[in-house]
Length: 424
Image 1 (cartoon, one colour):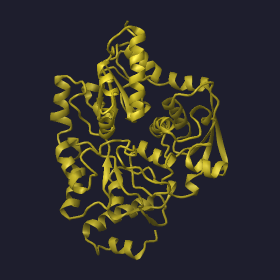
Image 2 (cartoon, rainbow, N blue to C red):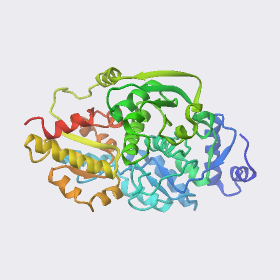
Image 3 (tube, rainbow, N blue to C red):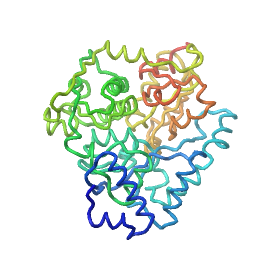
Image 4 (cartoon, helix red, strand yellow):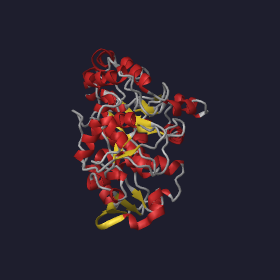
């Protein structure tokens, strides 16, 4: 790797031993992917994936403390993934005991470290940091040092920023020295599509299901998707962005997609068109039957597949303001149609704290509360990591949550039916 004089000086220890170690880590990381150089980070803010104070993660806290003790600050303020706990989310005595006494015992300590290191503000906890309400939305062409997979794929694809799928801790190290290795999705060549995905469904495909199918097929490659614009339009409005948020999270968790192009919609596809497709690209056709096949093959992790659901999570990744409003309308309509007053399964809709703050200023908040639905800033994955919660029959419309936990996937329509109608 060829370093500039400034980068070499940091590596040589001219700005202290701690910065030298950080730079050495980034250089070794770049070498592993045959990066030829380091390039400056150009985004205003960073985003960290590690947000939870798990007792077993003491090496992370030790590392953060070494950085703080050395007087080294992040070169950028940053947001961070969601908090793992919220007292408003249903949990029994034993589950709460495990959460607070055996799992997230270092949460307050770690959040104090994050604040000292450069947290944007005390509510900057969300996997959807790019929401307008949160305020960490990169610009087209910005170079990032992010690690949260659903945020990386959104930033690359919908916003046109440039970021590799980094690991946790690498994200903060890049921010500290202000550089990241130049390879993969940072390069023009690395952003070319090696798959052409043709959407040939008879209706608008479920975002999480379509993303899952593509992720499992292309894995870490870049897909160029044609035919989806007929269902979600050619404008990146609130509805399209919310759809692509959920779609992208599924491609990233069910595969390892860090970038996708949607013909006639995403920035680079609009600008460069089919020139983004690499020579020899493979083809994948998705129709109704293929989506049905994918969903039918999801494993059921419940001990009793016929168990009655005890909890429902919607919002992984976190919901947008428009999605919160839309779910309110749909839940009210579903309850009215069935003659029920409140949801039949405890249901939690999750969103960023600042999105919830904006939602709570609307009349939708009181309407949703009247249905019995709970809103929370929690990370559902961290909730389901509790071994006692893992045993519960939990349903979700998130393919990311399904993939990483024992929760069971249902489409949005199936979720709505389960929480408002079934059992009537």
